[in-house]
Length: 433
View (cartoon, rainbow, N blue to C red):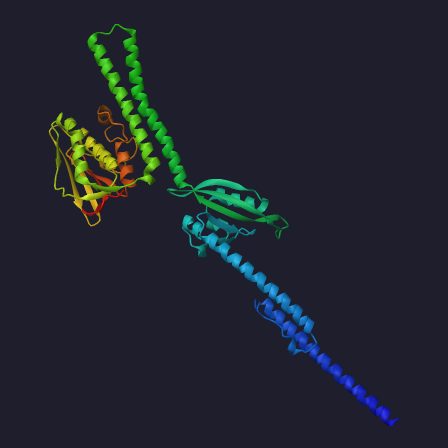
């Protein structure tokens, strides 16, 4: 009986010890699991649990935890990679992007928006949109988009010379109910610079208006004198005068159409210009030969002065047209018996060419506009000479296409100096095909 009781006591003690060890192991496993999950929640996705620390107890739990941790780590890495790609794309977009939370504060802004609004990102983050965009129409549109999910598109002038198109896109998937129980949305604002488009539209509109105006005068003259001739009762002298006027006006129209076609061709092919090595002196001599008769009629002397032999990188026919236009202008606006001079300065890698005259000169307020299409400083004198108002625009387009610069220095009543630059080439450089 004593042995039985002793064995029973030993058995009970052993069972108690086993239960205590099992409880201790379970408590350690639970604590280990809790610590590991806390590390995962704090961003340590590389944490793993090791079964050997608990033997058989908790081994399956550890393995399940490790599979879960590996899956979370892979998903987080994929999301981080996608986030970095999206952030890179966002920051390198030319479209300005601003993300606004449902409470109206700016959550995110990219570099394009910073440049457009000239405001660093530090002055955007966590600020109410009314303090960032101080424009009533834009602020009201943002509020409507935040509260009611209304799309909105309009153009705004941020500052002088900069017009942007603003588009508000409510984020429907982010629709929520705010603290007052009202439906609200996040809003994505897209901003595009449309200044150049609007400038080109204005230029096209002005171009059409100018062409219409330029054609209206010769057409009216031709129609009027033609009707007079058709009515009869015109003596021979008047008839000859009327026919001469009709001829001159038709020549004006022909020159205008030719210049328009030339300018259109230049605009269509300026990216396909194929410059070669050109002897600048030979091109000037060709231009002088073309205009010597015109200059001689008014006793104007064409002179090439201080012009060393030099090669430039250009298209010979286009360069000839530049000289013809500049020399023709100089002849038309110079007084009889004066002189038109061509010279150039040879620089390190450029050649600066000057076409100087002693004519009427250009007022200071017109110097920045002489290369505009149809702009005339002396309108009556230009039309009387048959000018179309496109010659200097063609000059600027050609020189720009050849990679040079063009400009003018002038004093009213003392003459003008039209200049342009071209790339200089060595004299022994082979001809470019």
